[in-house]
Length: 265
Image (cartoon, rainbow, N blue to C red; front, side, top):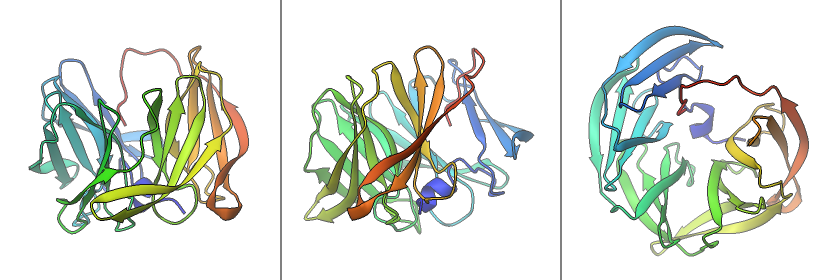
């Protein structure tokens, strides 16, 4: 099954539909509250200077049904907007600053407590994972990674591929190779992904754009790709034996029209 984080990701008003957060280069933020595929309301959020970047939209605490927004500044600072009351910002929390060489590269529920956790990578390749307390949305643990895939590998997605309700990490190499890290365990201030599975390689012109369960059949996160020419494809993933993952099928969907807007969720 997919994680609770992924099932409710980007739902800012708790109605069961994922919403869309738009941000322009000037720092203006607009939220479309969706009803199926149609915006039912438009919410103007506070403007944020361009040196802040949206890093995650998910539930960091379970005090309500609305998702929150995690921001990171160019100087490394982290801020968490806790949302509520019809997609309004109800509070802003400052999280510890990991420093400018650490970058949020992923988020999901890695320990199956229902709250979103934060995955970092350092400029030197080191990995770190901060777990978040589901009751309050505060950092409860800081763990150093024991693995380093090397500078040509990049985090391109997170999701549950082995139905253990804990997220894994999808990596893509500059040459198109793909690898999936699953089954994280935590001990003595460190974390390790105990399952490392190679997926079929793709041409370097194909780039992973996201992971989510599109078909609700296998209960695993599927993978969305976009080509440099605009083409879009989805890999529908299936659980395989011994808790590794394989591609079940691949489908193509129409390329999106060109636009000057940038969608961040």
